[in-house]
Length: 510
Image (cartoon, rainbow, N blue to C red; front, side, top):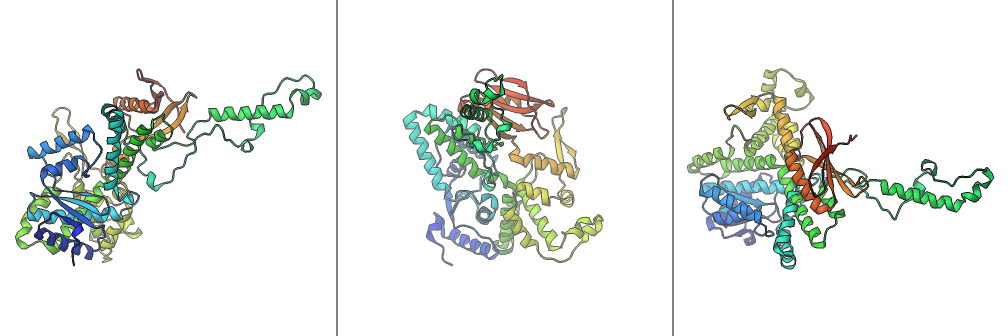
């Protein structure tokens, strides 16, 4: 096998050989990925790239500098270390830390190929722009041009507003067609509206035979057109709720051309990063599964096993207060593989309620590898957890929920109930743990106000956060904005018109 010289950069001959070996093993095991370019960087360069979200070039903004300081300080104080970074792109770009040991480099390279396979084949990433590396550079050029033309402070302030709203997207939108048709005052179809359902005002007529003279047909048609137009004015838009709030603002907010472009940039990048949030547990679990399999079975020398195991233990260690996506992801992948190898699926197995029989169940189906490749392709974290995290796994993994003791401040185990654990896990993953917000009306109260709706689902909004978000939306919409929610079990509307926010009586939605 001859390595394409374009697919490596600044690698030592030894590392190039390792890349070739691991890539060959990965392909032989069934992984399918875009060509992968490895770049060798020092920790300062790695920190800069990490601050930019994995990209060497982004638009200028203070938050990237702040993130760089956080990452650099964390490294200097020995709190964290970034071993690798990989970008969903075609070709994929991966960064190797120059100071890594040879065993760590082997681990990282194999881990990267697991990620690259996941990026290419998981459905969540199927609509992402595979040339985002170039697109990010284009975004940076456009924003820098606006800074030169408009002024740094004004552009940066507007970017601040946009970034505070970047989670108000429809994360499933790329995979679902949600069409909405706003009102059009100039074009309406009178034939679709029955005249008997829209009463037409007539002039009073004391005698029936005078009706045709007092209310001629031409006059009635004119009045009918006015009634239809009034109904159209009163009709709210959009006709159905819109989850993608940023798209609605792009379409209807009174923005200048540069503001509209900046908001579009923030929205486009939010959609690029959304699948990574949707598949964090699966993606990391898949990469750990494959780097572990490739290294322990095919690549590591006997003298390297101890060092590898020490590194692996650090990657998958669990904290009592924080879920480790690497650990949960890889263990659940192995649980699925084991179940399908032993035939622990189907109606017969599901209906079996004898723990001992379930534990010893083995039909020698040997479909584990086929199943995990299927899971990798069609699932995201929510469906992954919902379908495959069962009571047996929960018991084996010793999962629990925790709370903070108010007296001691210590974290204590709250519950080991399987249903409670699974529900809390799914709650934290739904919409990345953010509130579900829809646009309900762009002409609320017939005054051009914007009405949003919070899908309550048993959890109140944080009022101070909601108010700050409304303030930024109001700066974009340039009219009063409202959000309907539930506060202390009562329907309420939080209203902001540019002065002081207030809470009003709410609306009952169907």
